[in-house]
Image (cartoon, rainbow, N blue to C red):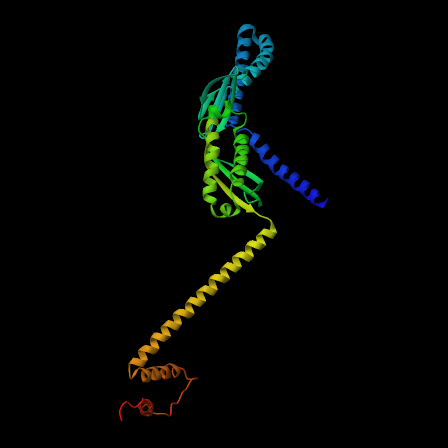
Length: 320
């Protein structure tokens, strides 16, 4: 029962994580030009009102102006309101897809463009590098290990016409297809491959998504895996394995060092045995090393000649 409750809470959290980006995907790009439309509206409204006043004065004097001015103000208001909405401004990174009476009319922008209300509908498309988040995906690898993987998509819109006409929401479509491809690619690999071949996995997912996204007028720049989360017990096992592997390498390195030291000592002993004065020089060198510090003072009371005499006496006799 407790396990089922935890699974339900995890599913609800994952659904909430997915719902937040989806609402962000649905927001259309906001075009510039509101300030320009306000200026055009005020100028046209003022010109229309002034023209109606002049016409009334010229036709019937003040009584005619009293009749024509209110009428001109109302008429010029609606005319100015309509004409001000014709002027739009697309930013340098925006392209406007214009539909006239429901049919594709053209691609406009950047800069000032004319869109006639009622007849035309325009949708602005951002052609900059876009970023979409891939929420945590629960995936089971080929060796039956559950992992949670999330990532990020970097893509651009290469053909705004196809991005608007061929797919309802290209952001949402790219995100969903990337999530499905991520689960398919990682599900066909083992855990060791997932941890050691991240670059190849990212390239493979990007190639799979690009094959479909190119038909929507978009181009996948790259897909990066941000985090790979594994069960805690598996992490502890991997930590113990890594610790044992490091201890094994340390033991082997120490054994190799002891072997090399033994070989060097044997070679040094053979060299000193073959040289008559090598032992005496080594003894004096050791004394010099010990006596370099005031705290270490060594006094050798036995002369070197005594050592030479002992060495001669220790040799076996070869003659009668």
